Length: 605
Image (cartoon, rainbow, N blue to C red; front, side, top):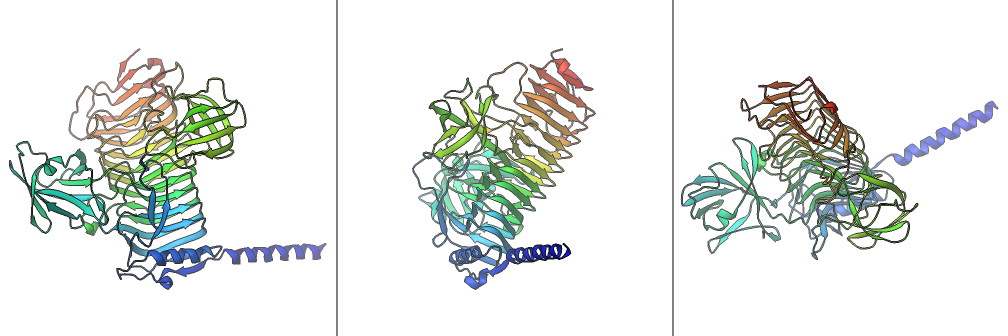
């Protein structure tokens, strides 16, 4: 018996040794495949060869050479990709050029060794498709010519505006007209955001006054515009940041992948939407920065969102990250409402992508659980489970369910995939300098937002929406904690600087609510105007222990600090307001008996 036990133990140890040996990563050096730092040579082909070598091993580490490497699109990997919130609905090619393409890779780490990868033309930094256990660390990406033009207004008078273009912003003047261009592209439409370096705020603006004026180049980076500027649209020192709003690319894509870690990654510019994760599981971003290189002197780091999560599951962790200078929201986490366009028998239906920038990828899989949602109320009509799912064309999927449809389900009703909804943790991070919102969160699994700073977001620092009629971004939240954050000078582009809980439900059912269990506790609001919380259709809302400091002295009294619309189970207590304002709370469609508070109330009794 003792001998058998000994043999059994030896067998286990031998098996463990073999497993450990198999998992010991093989180190692959990109330099061995012709990737030369600081050479200005195209590293595209060498990177593909190095990644192919990594794929031959069960576990590998790709080590980059340090310094600067350049990647051009011509020799890079190319794939046709359909990306959430980033695919324009037209006949143009969806082909993307990619610096680092990983397909079906597993157990691989890319050790950047603080390499700066400079992209040329319109390119994606990296794409992970159907990958497992991937780590990308200590790596930076930038553009030789960002697709964002930046120019600083240097002088303004009634007839002349003078501007100085950033050295990275290529332009020319032909026949008195300004033309913005880059490596293989020319700006056709102009979306302008103005950055005021004095206030550190970003505002919607327009380049049209300069496009309509007569332009003359006066120096290597300077242009004078002659026109009627009796009502100057800018002032000296303002920085205009201009892009073509057409979304034909993204910064990066993580698709149908699992256990992905990004560490000490620095994205200095991203064209299109930022790092997009769709239908992926367990994603960790730690010490990831989206910001221009300090030495670059640029303002803008991202054409649109910084971190975008669409239809993910498992855990989404964003810790110790930094985002500054994006043309849209730093973080957006959501699912997708698809609309039923055909019912075929008891358990088969056709569903359709409804927003023109989101389509073309599988949004349901066999075994997924789904909710049938009334698009008017955003309330569930029933639930089901997918037996099979087929993408029949770029806009439609056919679903076969295990059980017959609920009685009220018909064409026009929406479907949400509730299997692919993530738990979200956002901690110890700073988000600043955007003209739009800060964090957009719609997921029914637990959400924790703690110890962050949101500085000068032009609109709501946090938005909890849910809609089935505009962006079709789902869904309801059921467990949210917003604790110990600082909201500093937000909301200057909107009517309030509030945390905004704003589902787009167009009809109400008595006693039923879209969102529930939202706790906003121990935060500091350094507010520009009265409103710091707006909540609609919430059951179970706590606003407690928060400090509200008004930055501009006694603010307007027509906006309360807290606005409630159709809420229940509300607790508002132990909040400090300085200077005090009246009323503190205003409510509609909310009974006084549904609100427990120690603050001044204005509304139904």
